Image (cartoon, rainbow, N blue to C red; front, side, top):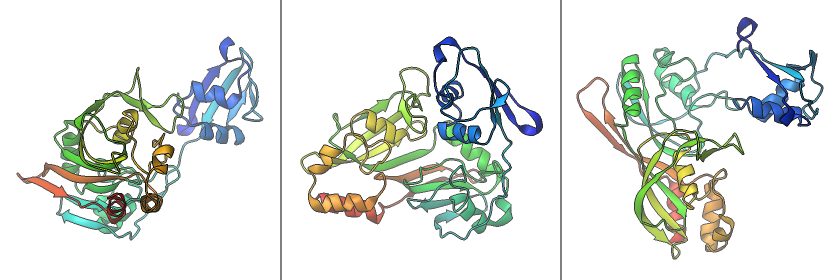
Length: 325
C-alpha cells in the first residue's frame, strides 16, 4: 500500500507460526520484494514500528499477535549524468546504436551502481535526444547483459525504435546467440534446457529453476569443442526466452555451470583442481563468468532491412581457451 507523499506503507501481523522469529527474518518472509539488508537498513533508520513504537533492532524476537508497520520513504532519483565512457560502436544511425559491451560495465543505474553505467555513456554519446526514451531511468535500453557478460547490445535512440525493438524482443523474433565455457561435457551434445525461472526461495539475490511459480524459460545449446578430456566445453547457447541470468541458471541446473561464475558456478572445486596450471591462472585472471553475447539479429525499426552482427570472443576468454588446449 502507499502512504503519504509517495511513501510505501506495509502492515504485518505476526501469526502463531512466526512467533519467536527474528524481526528481520519475519519481514523478509512477509515482504519478499525487499532484501534482508534493505529491511535491516529500514529498521536501523526507525522506519519499522512494533506495536506503535520504533523497533530497536533487527534481532528483536517477535510474538504472536504483534502488529508491525514498515514505512519505505520515497526514493528521490538524481538526474542521470552524462559520463564519457569509451564505447565500441559497431553500427549507429538516427534510430539505434549497436555496440560491443565490455565485461565489467553495468547496463543501467541501480542500487549499488548509481553511475558509470552504459546508460551514462549513451547519454554522453547521444546527447539530450536520448533523455526519457523508454523511461527516465533506463533511456534507450531494450534488453540487458549482466555486468560481467560481454558482447552485443542494441539501444534505441528514438521512441519509434524503442517500441519496435521491445516488441521484437517480446515476440522472440530477435536472434541471439552466446558462447560460454562450461564445466564438463553436456550430454547429449545438442539440445534444449527448460524450466521456470524465478527468485530463489533460499537466496533472494539469485535466480533458480522453480518447480512452482517463476516464468517459463528455454535455452538451446550445442557443444562446439571440449578440452582436457571433457573437463571443460565451449558451448553455443541460443535464447528462446530472456529471463534474468537464464543461461547461467539453466547450465548450472544441468550440472554444467559456467567457468568463473561466482554466483552459480557451484561444484567447480574438484574440476578446477584437475586443470593444468596455465588454465588455472587464466581462469583466475578472467575474474568473471565465461559468457559472451556473440550474435545479434533484428529487423530495423524504421528501414525495411534485417541487421545482423557478430562479435569475436574477447581476449580474456581467448586466453582461457588457449590455456586449455
